[in-house]
Length: 544
Image 1 (cartoon, rainbow, N blue to C red):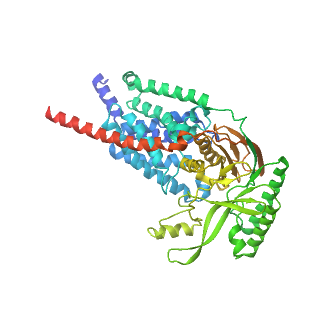
Image 2: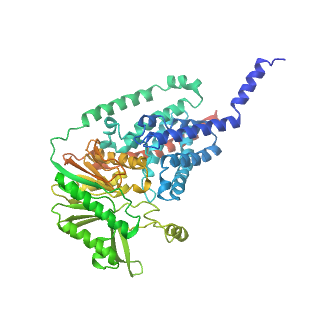
Image 3: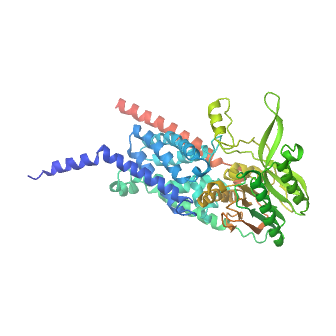
């Protein structure tokens, strides 16, 4: 006996509203978004990344936020944060087994907080909540770059490092303007598809203004970018030699330090055949502390290595830059002298140490944990697992090169816009990043790092060069164009003529992260306005 049409329709509706079916759909959407997010950047599939995916990568997330219940949204935030960053920063496990647990866990906590806020935007402003979601997302991206846990990896704008016409607006907005352009399609599509394909056309018909304004803004940014990309061929130039010795300098002890020094000297001498004006080694390329072992000589073998290093520098008639462990005797809180170590950069010229820069923004957990008193057991846990802690530097050092001034953000310091901006404000004409990413064993990890460095060039309109011990050693023009790139995981050197350009001081250099900060306040104001409007609607409903 056949069922009646009414019974068939009832069964279809029950199937559509099945909790299990909804759970499967929502989980599938979250996993899809996690994969698209990871692939938008340099990844385990493409070391250059598939940047067009970024424009739609978050759409499944916003669909889930629209359709899920409040209890589930908390769990979904945890799940998405952990999975997306486990896929995106998969290479963290090679640094330390704990890293691939700690890092995704931090983002699980972040999204545990962010997902409910995004859903609140949808509930408070049912018609235009997607615009408020956009502000909240940019605010979240900005806030997670500041403080002890600051970590800019995964900011959506960074996925566009190869899209040169688009990223030129960074000289005005920083990376946040690019993130606005990248995230908008996802929040819009997420709202349009919240009820499936069936409601898509109706949503487009009722919301034509937002995509039209976005399209005009996007085109305007491309036009700006086309004219902003300058030719720097007529600028004064300097020839730099970037040395890539392809070794994790912390591994192997004194014997390894000696081998690395011989490699660095050999590669440097080979590069001198191309008449560079300056030679640049990578982060902690030479490990034994030059200053410490010159003065205290607590270890004879390390002292002999330091002496060999200084003897070589004495024979050179051009400046050398190298990363080094700068050990110092300083008084602790009890007034007692103790050794502290800085992750530092040294400028040597004619055998003399001219100036030192000490890293000011340390990597959380692995280089710095300032909460020893509050969490003594966790601090000891990190120490027991061989994390190396440094002391934080205080000065934004500007070095005087042969014919130009430069500053040296160390390792992941070049992923923070504020640091390079501070160096430029103090007179740096070139940004020199020295880094050690060899521990990752991953070309994708090194490319993700370099992709963020591109924005430092555009934001400040300064040439940026990177000397990395295993990659990515490269030169980047003030337009963000990568002009030379040494193959990763090889011994070699890169000698390039770079433009010395300081003809403009950009709006970003002057005003900093104004758009990121503004998004925080605008997002809070939007949520407050939504709460007030919701209260007024309910009050009006009760009166009627």
